[in-house]
Amino acid sequence: QQPVQSPQAVILREGEDAVINCSSSKALYSVHWYRQKHGEAPVFLMILLKGGEQKGHEKISASFNEKKQQSSLYLTASQLSYSGTYFCGTELLIIQGAQKLVFGQGTRLTINP
Amino acid sequence: GAGVSQSPSNKVTEKGKDVELRCDPISGHTALYWYRQSLGQGLEFLIYFQGNSAPDKSGLPSDRFSAERTGGSVSTLTIQRTQQEDSAVYLCASSSDRGADTQYFGPGTRLTVL
Image (cartoon, rainbow over all chains, first blue to last red; front, side, top):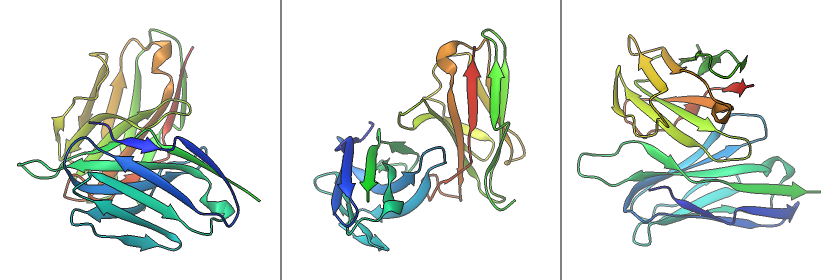
């Protein structure tokens, strides 16, 4: 049930763009994105609900393709502060209603000056 | 409190000893999660509480691991007869009434088993 994230790691120069993908083998109710900086706890970025809804947060936005059971996180004009490991958390679509999140293995993003 | 707190922040123990890790969720949050994160790895789900009950214990790695939550608030994760492979950061998160709302993470407890 664990979603698959790609790429596993990416290195950018400041100002470049990046896309992080999250795919599930199960139908999804929602996708959550978190960022974790080294030595710190994960911090919430955004939630996307089924229906292809796209949300944005500063220069970070995301899409959710319900049919393809995948989500993508877009980071544009990356800043040094974007460095960290990005996790997607997927909430499965089940009859009884939404329950726990299952997190992917993470994508390590490094932004160099 | 303002956020999720965990104690202790660091715990070093000898192989075979029992340890207790504590989590204080955000006041009013009914859902509480425990995760384990080994060095450089992802978030491994351990157990989920809704109120005082644990509808999902599927992530507990062995019967040496147990958790309880009392009064719908504080939770304790207990690891008995610790092994070196138990060394990791144990993270607690809480969320409001629905199980998969935004999760707010605590700072974690770094457990080292010698």
